[in-house]
Image (cartoon, rainbow, N blue to C red):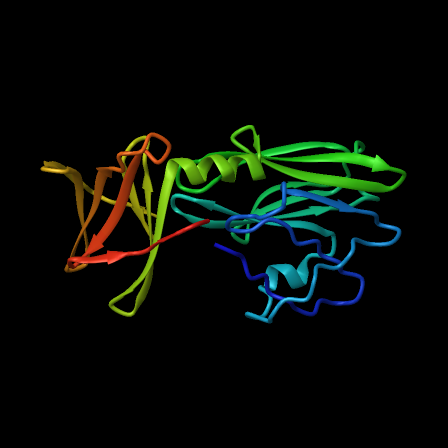
Length: 236
């Protein structure tokens, strides 16, 4: 699944660096910036929506990442004052960390993201001169590595039901099911050709069917059925 980043206008002097996405492609969660020249702007993208107020107010914004977890896609924003050493971390617009007048300009900041309190770390490294590099790690792995591994351990479906967009995620190692950030109550049962994990969304009957692909590399195939209709899987 690709990511459409919004293009927006910011006050003079504010140069954001946007990186990452729901399923970053070709990105490692790494952002470089040089305060003397400013980061290179991202390639033009179709305008999707106006920027949130938090972005407009940020004067030292250096990096933004979108991280897809089971309970939803979370936005991480990082401010770094390269003269004062100020560090501010926002998760979904909420301030998680604020440090003013840090003597050391390099280092790391660790915090939690999402309902499962997933560990995230922003590393600040000096590249050369006044240039800095910012990398995001999730559970001790680079963002790219984490998302690649996650694509192997989860299945994600997006559908429109009763006027609402739903995002359903199956964690294959635990068989936990999430819907729009809420962990669902499920009931499993064996059927002739595999297993079914049942749950309800409103008045709709849903289940995830697991059957063997018959191929060693493919392993088990999981399919979401809602009201006897198969929902296509998406890639994040």
